[in-house]
Image 1 (cartoon, rainbow, N blue to C red):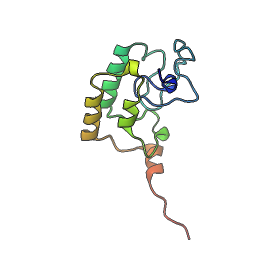
Image 2 (cartoon, rainbow, N blue to C red):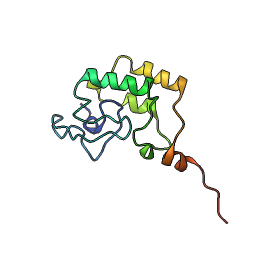
Image 3 (cartoon, rainbow, N blue to C red):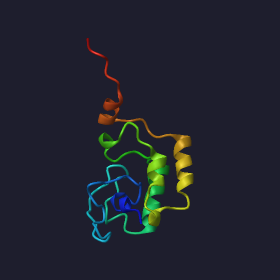
Length: 124
């Protein structure tokens, strides 16, 4: 197992460092909520089936909308993040979900994320 996998969300692959979603041993959930997909570690991601179902819903229905949009990096790379999901939680349809996302796009940024994406004019 990749040592960095223990820092990643099992649903969307977002790195949670320095927090460990499932503790050092991978068996003690933190119950923290992922700022990307909104899963609560230890409650909703406790099985492969749940992770796959939530991931599918996050892509197909929520269109990869961030739970905490202010945490979304401007250069966010959804395909790379999904491909970085720990091996034990990858799904056979992950590549299809990536293609769906690339074809349909994501909802426009809202709130603080939209404000931070706007270039500010140069002041002279």
